[in-house]
Image (cartoon, rainbow, N blue to C red; front, side, top):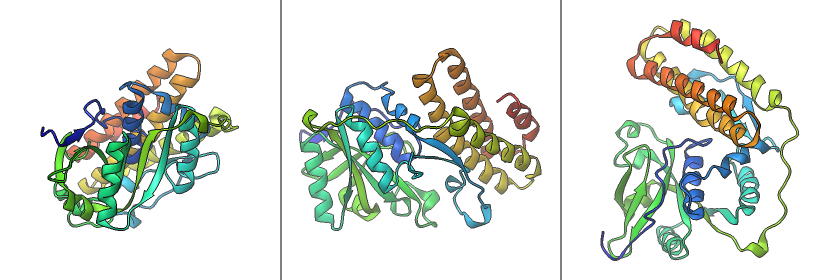
Length: 305
């Protein structure tokens, strides 16, 4: 690359789900700033959270991404990446010598200044975007408000090209700054190092049993899947529910089990649980991609979870 291209060469690729697409990018930022591409400390954040089950209606949703009956909420019952949730996440990052702040972007010139400032101060910038305006996102070119998060890995100060690391549209690619401006919905997140002098004591974890945190809501989720899949006959419905349930497993259930793998005893048992749920996610993805109802295999697998 050109000399004027500032690039975070060791930035990990965002291929490990964590709560949502923003979370996966934050995980990459934390690993880059700590200098360890396998660091799993961020998963311990979920020990302060719980899983909540929601009864959703397919008729109200266009994108299966939003059909996720389980979500992770903080001790204050806020989604992890809500405005309030970000404050709790930032307090957790303090103990790692890091900080995360939300940035509001009103003008293109302001966005360029934020990008340049981030790279000059070794901060990682994650932008909230609408995929409707993404040139590589043909799937969403007829659907506005398809939110996504872009992890910025590099910038060329001369040409204003932005190097993006992304799991949705190819590992790494460049976009013109004007295109990034058009996609940006006016907000983003900066993750960087924090002065040790500003670190405070760590908040305590959530006071709930594992049954309340995980087992009860996940049991409702498994029951819903077992009731729903045998009734699906249309390919479009198999695709919708297959993707929605797969996303739920990958972004909610598995990260929570990875937290347990770090925080709780019997590592062998937790590792086995992670592998079982990863297998379920593959079964669900196969159903979504093929449009074939494999409910018999799915329901028999659900019984062992």
